[in-house]
Amino acid sequence: MVNIKDGANYAPTGEAEKVVAPGEFLFAAAFLDHGHIYGQTNGLVDAGATLKYVYDPDPYKVARFVEAYPSVTVAHSFQQILDDPALKLVNAAAVPNERAGIGVQVMESGKDYFTDKSPFTSLEQLAIVKEAVVSSGQKYAVYYAERVHNDAAWRAGELIAGGAIGRVLQVLNLAPHRLAKNTRPDWFFNKQCYGGILTDIGSHQVEQFLTYADCSTATVNFARVENFGHPDKPDLEDFGEMSLTGDNGASFYTRVDWYTPDGLRTWGDGRTFIVGTEGTIELRKYLDVTGQAPSSTLILVNGAGESTEECLNKTGFPFFGQLIVDCIQRTENAMSQDHAFKAAEISMLAQNTADGRRCG
Image 1 (cartoon, rainbow, N blue to C red):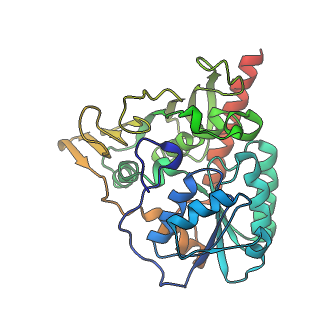
Image 2: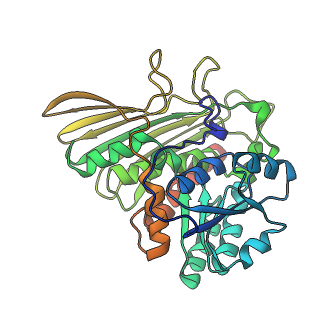
């Protein structure tokens, strides 16, 4: 299932702590428009959840999913999933501008919702979903995979929380992705559907910054989007960048783009550089260029010296078990609702800033 050259279908799996017994936590997968649905599903199954149903209006997508998860039952409609009281959560990766509306339906049916990022494509959608969360009492969880489903990124959070580099002052994220233009669906090139590159890929990066720097929110200093190299796809933004300042003074810069060279052995050479008052961390998240691939490498320098840690297949991706337990116990240990929403909100504010800059 893991294709390290194809980011759209990158679906990590691994040995994880089972937090529930078979049949104790039932979930469904629906709207399989983005390949991240496989990573979301793997994470939940690895942590012990039981996949009951799958639904998508496209029989080809369903057949492919059933091939990966043969024990799943194909639902004849999405309403069948909504009506099943045994289901605790619906896991979905719909076209981005449809995710909020689907989530509202799920929560109104008394189930928690787990969506691929970006969870929204507009601030108006965010406002509607916030109201639905309050009225329903359900969770609107988000798959920010570049932190929660990457070993080095997760390990960095553990080290920072343990004080390994002191207080975080600055986070720099570089996030190139492989375009694979001929394999992408039409909606991928329609900005009304995907929301813009900062709304989309940028939400991953903002979420990492808020986590590592322990910020509740941040302000946008600068944001820019461009289509540098794809005039045949005028709605595609193939390059984006933004600068933020956190509410605790920490700074952030990210570059996101669709310019991974064909010769790279993975779908992107994602890197993160974190500066603290007492040390630094560098993450080489998917490979070590000219070295090992796949790889998930963390380089730590602090008062104790220099060290390199190969994190690949070492963490067990605890986020998913934490999410399952949160759904059962109504806690917020995996990720708070405010945090999930704030990462999306800031990325959309940056997108709006960049859009205004292009129009100005």
